[in-house]
Length: 238
Length: 236
Image: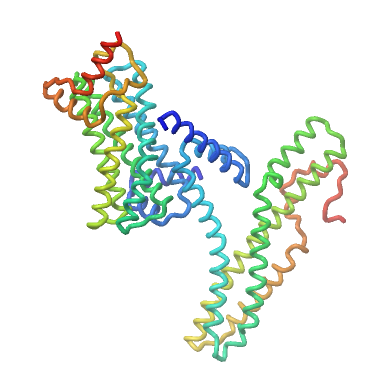
């Protein structure tokens, strides 16, 4: 099976169409699964560690572990939803084929993240600040997501119905993936933080964080209602 | 139910999946362990892929036999109600199909048996080596060697059956095209007749493959296997 896994890895990079056809055909998808999972863990691990170069130290290890974990957990959450969306809109694939396709897409996205890692590294090395860094990372995720969704689109069919399915799936993926990653943060590590926590305390939500980061990158610093509540509670306890 | 409860349930289901995957593997080796370890944390993704792969493997084995049967039936259809029909009459087709199914089932049984740990040749060889190192009693050693020989014989049988089935399958495919060609070109059925004769010869061989000499395996066994005065299996 090892040679098959390497062959699939090669296809993942060079021939997304072949991967999509393989997923649609079903059958023995174990090599595809193993190759895609390896690509996902490797790609997300490298990108996570690169993000942490802004902080360095223990954060490199934490982010290198947490980003693959976030992506794998997201896959666990979104695959059944994707299967339901595709079946509901008249494009049923076998469940195992759907798993193969989604995981292969995530693996491809992770390989794109590896390709973007030098850009992140260079940016932080040239002194990119925390908030613009978060936005740059988000832009990299978006680019990787486009590469991944391209593969998904080939799998479900490149037509209007396929586009609707992929759009709905992208919505689910963004919400589930964003919230999962947000729960597992920090990946960059705040410059002001004294120590490097594995997980940060829960505050507000992913969407609040996106809004806040966007404002902060333009120099508008506002404390959200949820955050101020948490801080007030923390102050009260002290 | 909070996140910790959910995690606990997920972990329990993962452990159960790992055990199921490991126990249902034909060979409990490193690959089986890797599959079980992958299943424990990723069971919602790995289990469907794993089950689908097993089903696909079974289907592939079944469809190979079905293709040969289909070729045989197509060959008969090509000559039905033509002067060529005596070459491959329905009664002959039915008998060929029966023999083919019997041989395919026998090969499948043998393959399943050899996939079990107790029929693993590597494990049997390791056992003999371990007993030799431990200086076990000659009787224990002889029994272990006999087990190893029997496993090797079964492997040899399975390999021979597989080869015979593959050759027969190709021959039947050639017979089909030859009969179709003879029908549409109106050419002499001479070559088709030769192939039919060859098919019957192969089928007869399939029927007797368990009675023939089996010891191609002798060359693969080390000479020391017979060192303790153990009789060669074909010497009676």
